Structures are given as structure tokens and as C-alpha cells.
Amino acid sequence: MSNFPFLSVLTVAPLVGALVVAFLPRHRPELAKQVAFVWSLLVLVLSVVMWVSFKAGGDRFQFRESYSWIPNWGVSFTFAADGIALVMLMLIAVLVPLVILASWHDAESSKRSVPVYFALLLVLECTMIGVFAAADVFLFYVFFEVMLVPMYFLIGSYGGHQRQYAAVKFFLYSLVGGLFMLAAVIGLWVVGGKTFDWQALSQVDISTGTERWLFLGFFLAFAIKAPFFPFHTWLPDAGGAAPAGAAALLVGVLDKVGTFGILRYCLPLFPEASKWFAPWALALGVIGIVYAALLAVGQNDLKRLVSYTSIAHFGFIGVGIFAFTTQAGTGAVLYMLNHGLATGLLFLVVGMLISRRGSALISDFGGAGKLVPVLAGVLFFAGLASLALPGTAPFISEFLVLIGTFTVNKPVAVIATLGIILAAAYVLWMVQRTTQGTLNPALTEVDGMRRDLNLREKVVVAPLIALIVLLGFFPKPVTDVINPAVQATMDDIGRTDPAPSVGGTVQEAAK
Image (cartoon, rainbow, N blue to C red; front, side, top):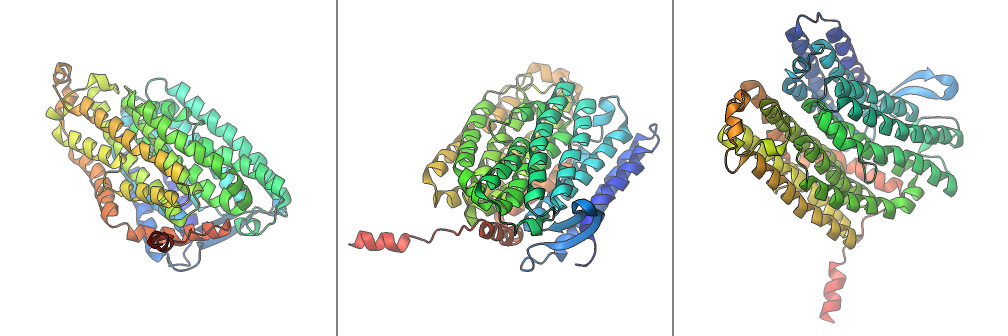
């Protein structure tokens, strides 16, 4: 199976499914939903087969495919996946079917075309797979930009309050970042011997000044996409306006393109510049952790609150990347996966609450657990996972990031630890204000608040809960895939883990 064109098939399959769904009759919405869901399950099955076929101790990049596209420019459809990309591809394959199920009635409530909504979700899946599978810099850039289009329409056409403002802001921020990257891509093509192939470019020797400018072009695009402080302001608006399912994909997957891009392109292609800019990147990371957490505490909108928590979490991922240790790097990649699962669950559950109440304002809830106890329990679990409670998957990620950073940069690790305390504050306060305490009398007058989780919604949340618990106690199947890719990335920038100093410390104490 290692010779099967997994990546090209995975990229094309959702696009074919989107075309099928888009042309289904508008008066048969249930058929469109069913076809979209079944199609996403086929992608999931193929992704699982690819995961099983991946050899963790084998070549760094596997499932490589290359097809000529624009020979005069040195552009080709080249796909390949290392352990980092493979983990993100599996995250996409798991989340999309669950998002489709969770969004079963979202398009109908917006009074717009149901087939188009689910077709857009499949187009989005196609572009997300393509951006993580691309091994050609120009192809990566194309997917990076095209990915904006389906999300723009999902927010602008099917979103809630201020959806058009949020959609335009999301598009413009990402487009500006893309223009910086386009300039850097052209510059890289010129200095790299007129090729866009990642493996060839990774061997090119670039002068110090040029390397720093090229790094900056890529990094700005990825920092906006992630988003890192101070490029974060588009996310609360987009996350707050987007339908819950689209928001789960936006924060759970799309934003990871930024941190993935740093690992795949900034560090290996511009190693010296990466080390030169690292102190600034670490500073942005720790500021983002504390600043976003403080803003989250003061939010009254559920979806905006979850969006701000994600900005804080991306600060942890950034710190893990630029600490330049394998522990912190593995923790950062594992955080990308676990954050997608935990925040995806949190967004979906928040969406279920909002659809029942008809409001996203925390002040419109209060004591909701007395009416919908199972839904309240799932919200509590998702919140605990988001604050990285031991026993949940995000705890492993956060622990690895902090311990890996502490070995090389103690002040950054100590400041980042404040984010854990603040996370407990904003998550527990949010849960307390929505589901605990005295029952808000207004809730008893809302018919939706008398409906607890139905079977479809239980099917949505159960796999995510199971994965969060499983990876919280047994992350080895994932870390075995991630570790070789992270180690190879550290080798690319010439960094090794610090040697243990315990022996020396004991000897000095004995003297």
C-alpha cells in the first residue's frame, strides 16, 4: 500500500464529493447531508489506511508523488508527508465527518442552500489536505490562498451576527499575509535555482541577509494565519461569527497551517534566520499566552471566549517551536493535534448550547445544567481538556512544551506557566456562569433548553471525548510518528538537546 497515491487521492476525493453534493436538488437537503457525510467517511477510512501504512522508522517523507505542472517555472504537483503532516491529515479526516454531523441543521437555520453549505465543507477539506500534503512551495502557496475561499463563504453566508464584517476581516488579514509570502516565494525561487521543490530548496545555501528577509516574509504570513500576537484580532471576530462547525475547523485545523508552515518551511529552509528571530518569536508567544488569557476572562460571548483561548494556546505552540528542543518541538506538534480535538469539541458543544438558547451571550444562561445535564457535562469536560487537566490529551502537550522550554529558557517557561493558572480562571468561570448556579428563569421559557443531547449529537462528541482521554493516557502511537520528524527538523537548524546537568550539579554540591 505504500505505493498507492494516498495524498493525491485524499486531496481530490473531497473536491469530487463537493461537486456531487453541490449539484444535488435543493429541495432534497437530507440527501445532500447524507452524501457529504458518507463521502467524508470514505476520506477517513483512506486516511486510516495511510496511517497504518506509514513507517515511523522509515524515510522522513513518505507517500511521495510528483506530477509535472508548469515545467518552465519548475512547478509540479508534488506531495509528501512526514510525521507532522500525517498527524494533521488524520485530524482533518476525523473532524470533518463530525463537523458535518454537528452542522446537520445549520444551513437550514440560515435559510440558504443546504447542498452548497455541505459542498463548501468538502471543498474546505480538499484545500486543508492539500496544504499539509504539498511538498512543492508554489503548490503549498496555492492551497494556502485557495483555502480562504470556502471559509470566507461559510462565514459570510452562513454565519451569525456581523458575519460579513468578520468574513471580510478574515479574508483581508489572510490575504495580506499571503502577499508577504508570495514575495518571499518568488525570492526563494530566484535564489534557489528556479525550483520550488522543497527537498532541493532545503539544500540551497542562502546569504545571511537574504535568508532573514525570506524568513520574515514566510513568518509574517504564518503568524497571521496562526494567529500569533499581535496579528490575532481577526480570529475572535471570525470565530464568533462563523457557524459552530466551521469555527471548529477554523480554529482546530486552518490555524494550524501557520504553525505547520513554520515547522515545514521557516526552520528547515532558513535555519540561521530562524535562530536569529527566535527570541522575538518567543516573546510574541509568551505575550500571546498571557494577553489572550486575560481577554478571555472578560468575554461575555461564548464563541469569542473560545477564540481567545485558542490564541493563548497558539502562544504555547509558538514557544514549543522556537525553544528548539525535541521535547518542546514534539509537545508543540502534539499540541496542534490535541488542541484541534479539545477546542473542536468545545466549539461544537458551545454551538449546541447556542442553538438551543438562541443566544451566544453567557449572561443569557445560568444554571443550564439543571435542564440539559448531559450537555452541561460534556461542556465541563471540554473545558477541562482545554485547560489541560492531567488525564486529558492537552496536558501531555503542555507539559512537554514547558519542560522542553525550561531546559533552555527558564524565564519563558515560568511566564508561560501563568497561562495555566489563567486558563483555569476563564474556563471554570465560563462553566460556572453557563451551566451552574441558580437557574435563569428565562431558560425555562425556551423550548430548545428542554432538549438534552440527542443521538446524533452524542455520536459527534463521543469520538472526540474518547480520543482526548486515550491520548491523555497513551500518546505513544502519535509521539512515535511525530518524534522522527521533529528530530529531523532540529537537525535541519543544527540544534541538539542540552546535555543533562544533574551529575555535575550533584558533584558540585558534594564539594
